[in-house]
Structure formats: structure tokens, C-alpha cells
Amino acid sequence: MSQTVDRALSILPLLAEGPADLGRVADRLGVHKSTALRLLRTLHDHGMVYRQSDQRYRLGARLIALAQEAMENLDIREIAHPHLVRLNERCGHTVHLAVHEDGEVLYIDKVESRYPVRMYSRIGKPVAITVAAVAKLLLADLPEHERRAFAEQLDYPLYTARSTPSAPAFLRELDKVREQGWATDLGGHEESINCVAAPIRGADGRVVAAMSVSAPNVVVTADELLTLLPLVRRTADGISGEYSGRTPVKGTA
Amino acid sequence: MSQTVDRALSILPLLAEGPADLGRVADRLGVHKSTALRLLRTLHDHGMVYRQSDQRYRLGARLIALAQEAMENLDIREIAHPHLVRLNERCGHTVHLAVHEDGEVLYIDKVESRYPVRMYSRIGKPVAITVAAVAKLLLADLPEHERRAFAEQLDYPLYTARSTPSAPAFLRELDKVREQGWATDLGGHEESINCVAAPIRGADGRVVAAMSVSAPNVVVTADELLTLLPLVRRTADGISGEYSGRTPVKGTA
DNA sequence: ATGAACGTTGCAGTCAATGCAACGCACCGG
DNA sequence: CCGGTGCGTTGCATTGACTGCAACGTTCAT
Image (cartoon, rainbow over all chains, first blue to last red; front, top):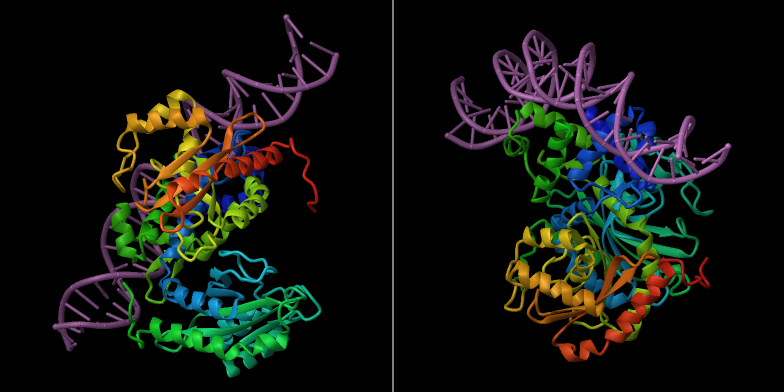
């Protein structure tokens, strides 16, 4: 809507690909160098980009700090965290918390596995939306037409042979997930990694977040992981209760 | 430099304080509601802000994802990480990696303590610049006039009785740190937490990052923590060697 | 039913963003 | 030593994008 701001913001994902010099930024934006310079300067004044010693620009510290604050302000995260830790203590595997926002699903919290072999993931990283168990739960809760429209405009990369291959398959999977109230990802993203996930609901019953337990095949088989499902669901329900204000929170400062 | 972009970017820290509605944003910016609306819309289109169900705005997912990419692109981080993990495995305490950028010092990596009692901190959080051991190392390396100018315009909050109280005291501390090549924070931020830190240098000898080991008093005394200093310094030197290309990296894909 | 509070839209004026061209500077090869 | 090339940077005139206004549509609460 606002051309100048639009251009300025377009610089950020561009720099996320790696450092770039002025000329490169101007080219990619399709504007004159002087224009790009002024935009970059403004971004710099706000700490959103940093000018490294070779004069090239990259993303700045303020951006990272802002994102940090953004995550700390998510109340669902604060409420869920102790539950995630407790679950991790009981099963030992990696525990994730994810939310959905404008077509992206991202991890907002994580408790590391206590086994030596761990899956790779990072807080803040957008998840593989077509296969991740948490993504299925979050998307399954969308109203039908939105869900359909969203599914159709997605790409369906074949990470593995078990990845969701197409929109119809994905929509079918979402129906199943919505009905059963939990989801799995059995090697759909990384061949050797399995996940079970459960939804966290607000007072109105809408899914506000999803949590999952992930473990590589070498630690536990998919079947063994599935035995944790009741525990995962109980944990998610506990968080739901607290988040929606149904459960009186005891013993918290 | 660019008024529109300047205003738009000013919205972000404002929203970092917590969700705000249109009127509030307009007020804080000192612009008309319609102007604020258009700025927010543009930010929204880029996923930088999110409109929650109560119509209020808060920081968005793309911001978090961008920050994530920003950190993953820092090569120092990638190089350092395995070293930090190894150090953590040997001593068990929390290990941090921090960089300096335009007057801010922030943690860009962290390996959690394996002791049950842990210090609180988060990747991306700007550190207490006047007391943190890593901050001292990073600032001590600035050219003298910059260092002085920077120190003078800082605030010196007294987190504890041992916090650095003033610019002169801080500058004296920086001199000491630069000379000895390592730094400590003994209860200067949190009464019961101590730190030892060492610098990581690039090929030109400039300090590009700093790493630290932190532990609460209840786990080890300050004296015991100091016995780790040689190990910390060796680790930092190892990272320096690899970063500056002096050490051939072995066994890495 | 009435009003207040809030987000939203269309519009005309003007101020701020744009592209241009010229400049300074560093680097490189002759 | 000098001319050339490739950068980032600056001042300026033009214009078009941004602004503030006022009016409208909702959604609440009274």
C-alpha cells in the first residue's frame, strides 16, 4: 500500500539470502542506486540492517532483538513452557510448540531431546507446512473454504517418499486429523524422524497452537513413539485448560 | 532519512511492548489514524505485524523468521557452535556466544547448562552492556576515542552492588580487560551469577565475537569458575584459528 | 434507539521521495 | 605516474506518493 515502505521492507528478505552491496540491492528492487541508499540508511538508523566492514549490508541486531521480544510476548508460549519441560523430563524426546499465522507455521518454543541423537530444528524457523504434524493440526482447524483455498496454492515438495504429494491428499489428511484430534508425521520430512502432535485450544475451542514430540528412528520406533500419544494429548489439554482460564493456575509467582 | 519508512519502522519497537490498536499506534507516532493504518497495512503485507482476532496489532511471524535467517547466516556462529558444545560437555555450564553491532551486544548462540539450576538468558536478547563479561571484551577492542564516546553516553544501572557504576569505572575495567585478554562478571548483573569470558579474533586480530561460561554460585563458587579460564581461552583461540582460516578445518562436510 | 468509539475509504493539496547527473574516492593496469 | 573503471555519495528539480481531512460503516454499550 505504501510504496516507499514496501520497497524498504522488500530489502529485508533479500538480505536474508546473504550480504549484498548497494548496487545489488538497487538492481533487485528495480530502483535507482540513490533511492536504495536512502532506504538502506533509514533501515540502518533503526538497526534493521548492519553495514559490515566490507561495506556490504546484512540484517541487523535490532531485528533479532525485536523478534526475541515478539516471542517473549506470546502468552501461549509462557503458559506452555513449563508443561513442555515436564513432558520432556518424562519422555526425554524433543518437544516443540508451534503457532500458525497468515499462512506460515513456526516453532515458537522447543525443549531439546536428552538423547544424544537429536533432530535439527530451530525456534523461529518456519516448518515444512505440508508434512509437519503441528502444521496439520493448525491448518485442520481453518474454516473449510479457507483450508481448501490455502491447500491449493501450496507447493508439495517431496522431502521423502512419505511426504504429502498433493492438495487433495493434504486435505484428506487434514480431515482425518481434525476428526481424530491429533496428528503424526511419520518420516514425511526426514526419512528417519517421526512425530506425534496434539492441539492446544483456546476458550472458544479454536486451535491456537500445537505441540509435538519428535524422535529419530534410531532412538524409538514409530510404534513406540505412538504409545506416548496419550501423554502428549494430556499435556496439550493441560495447557489448553490453563490458557483458556479454565484451570486455576497454582503455585505460579 | 526517509520519513515514511522511518515512521513505519518506529511502529515495530512500539508493538514489541505489547499489542496495540490503531488509535494507539497513531497517537504514539503523532500521525493521523489513516496514515497509521496504511503503514500498518504495508507492514502486514510483509508479515512484519500480525492482526490478532481482537483487531489489535502485534509483531508478526515473518519478523521472527527473518531474524532466524539473520542468525543462521552469521558464519562465526556456525564455526563456533561445535566448539561451544564441546566446552559445555566438558564443564557442564551454560556457554554463550555474543557479538557487537552498532552499540548493542547480543547473544547469538547458547548451549544450556546441564545442571538443574540454570541462569536465564535467551539468544537474541541484548545483554547488559555495562557489566556482562562478553560486552567488556567486545567494547574493549574499540579504538580509544570511540570507546570513550560510547562509554560516556551509556546508562549505568546498578543491577547489584557490584555493577559497574560509572563511565570512568567502565573505561578502567575495559583497559584492564584489553590488557589481560579475558574478562569476568562476578555478580554484576545477577547477584548470584558469575561469568568468565574470552575473545574470538579475526585474521586481523580484531575481536569479532566473545564467548563466556556462566554459572550460579549455588553450583560453583567464583573461584572454582575461574579455574575454567584456561579452558575457555583455549576454546576461544580454537574458534579464532578456524574463523581466521589459520586452522585447517578437519572432518567437516 | 441513541450515541460513542473505532476502523475504513475517497479525495485534493503538498510535501517528501524519486531519478538524474555530477562528484569523490579507491583500486587496477598500462 | 596517470587515466580508467566501479563503487558509494550528494544536490537538485520534478512529480507523484503520502498525508490529513471529513464522511461513512460497524460494533458495542447505554
